[in-house]
Image (cartoon, rainbow, N blue to C red):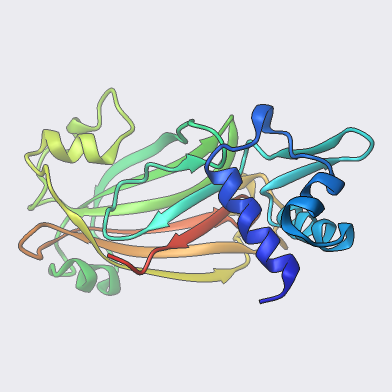
Length: 233
């Protein structure tokens, strides 16, 4: 790993831990002295973090932790308790629609239901500080989670809604992540150009006995999001 990459990794850990007072990084000379490298190496690390959306550089003013960048720990916990890097704020979810419908055979197979079986379809968009982060759709087998639409009344939390339906425990079975361009509608919801790349995530959640209760896909702004994968579980 190159020196600037080591500096980038260390700074990202500091950002995640909220180590910088008022969200402002020390100057280049201070950071260079800390890591035992030259200013050029520090600037390369900062430039990389800026391009990833983790930092904001205000020329003549300083370098600051971005307040709209999210790190998501990817593990078996399906709850989307996002954390803003360097801050303790939650991402807000807005439910766009809830309907009962049938689904395509591919989705039905992921849920282990007949293609003609009904599901509860929940469309939503997530925001950071009123800026859109992700938009997507979740599908819950209606027979396994009866009354889910009613359970969502007055709340935007799938975990809380499932708990109202008697499902207190569930876990992530798998997550698949790819990249693509957004559709015109997705670009509009996320307030980005249709040429901007997005992350496309699909996943399945299951009950403790392995029964699928949710299939979902999300379209996520790649300039404000990263996945943190831990291998020590």
